[in-house]
Image 1: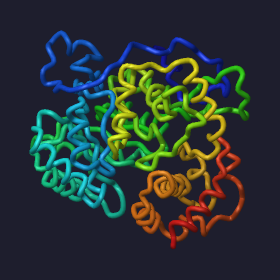
Image 2: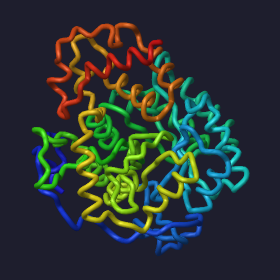
Image 3: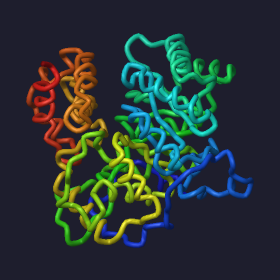
Length: 414
């Protein structure tokens, strides 16, 4: 692939709908990828039982196409059922549920066996962080998880690309690696993804990236759907994923449903028995460069809904309804590209604020959202908005940023 084909400049806003992008038939159930043969490991996608597993880049871990998010962890019977159905990767963090997410997963590891589950957890680079705080954070996570090692150790949502090769970060990674406390390095990306992901891939240190990827990132639209100018054309997320693939950096998609445990009954976008959430998962899994989609499954109903997509590709009618959903709701959705925050003359943390608002309204994580907002300095909140409209002028997606940041201030500061 030529270098200029991986450039992160903007794409044309409208594309014609490309049919036949769907690959393979999927299916669902149980097993450990420890049993993969040498021949199977040469493939990038294998089936065991009724679950498909994909290779996570150069880690050579084969992880289930649907993975489990740990914020929060579901009740124990649901958690065990997910593992029995073939889910073998769990994402967590020391910050999830004040460490209780890691404790619950640690209990699971003791009950089902460490070799049945790949675990990724995270550390932060915020406030007064240092090499020592990173190492202490990881040791604390290992203690709560009751394990000697992590399969993946990730930086949690760095805003600045320079953090990725900061000597304190690299030294902490190096020491922990020598001690055998993790196998592979990675990061989760919540904002400024064009610069963060490109830096992570180019520096050559990171084995995987957990990246927001969902149907709002579509870069093709059906001819018969009218959209606003530059309709989702500046996302560039697919090009970032292609860039990662070119260096064999694994990709796990997150925020694919853009909701947590609080799922709405969006029957108007239903296609037969297929919910819009199932269509979202099918759409994401069409991308062969993604190893897995990590989501929350907090009820048996959600577990059945989500795992049912394994083995089923996206139909033309499902795609049409999915694209209609995007067209009708995209102005309510922030892509976390960071353009507004980077160019705000008042230095308001707009991208972070909009993410906290989603936690509050869609994920039902009210306490977590309020705590995160409280950590911002007053000058970084909507209180300091000068109403200059620069954020909305720059937003490629037409999001009502001023209205939403003010709504966040009303809801989260009380």
